[in-house]
Length: 156
Image (cartoon, rainbow, N blue to C red; front, top):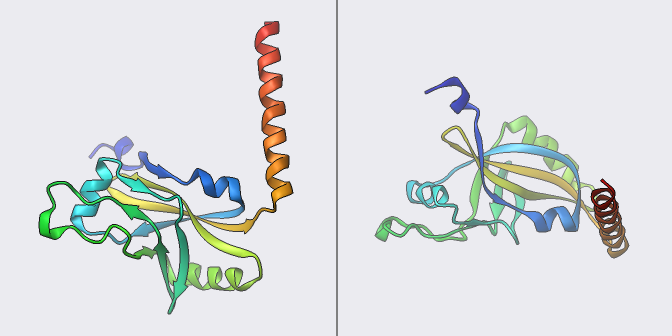
């Protein structure tokens, strides 16, 4: 395998709703424990992270609500599309996250699912929920930037 291919990232699914609903404090990378038919389905881009969240149970990290569509040719080997997916991280990182999530208002949210080389990885964000007025400020800022870009484009 060529050296450039080894670290190449190809995004499968992105959770844009999470970026709208939460302030992202920190981002962690985790491996995802999957079955063969799930990986084949992901190669076709059949994943949805919209209502997904992460939970720490017994010192292990799980992604819940991640939908991976069944593989067309998978027949009896297909798994439940919404089954909990175990995330692979170092024990020290999981313990750190347990302490951070125990604080009020913090949660773990899957931000994106991607291939890193031949491995499937998930970006997990330590997030704090936004209030409605925070969302309105973001929308106003985005509209203002769009207006500035439009004005600059017309001027030049």
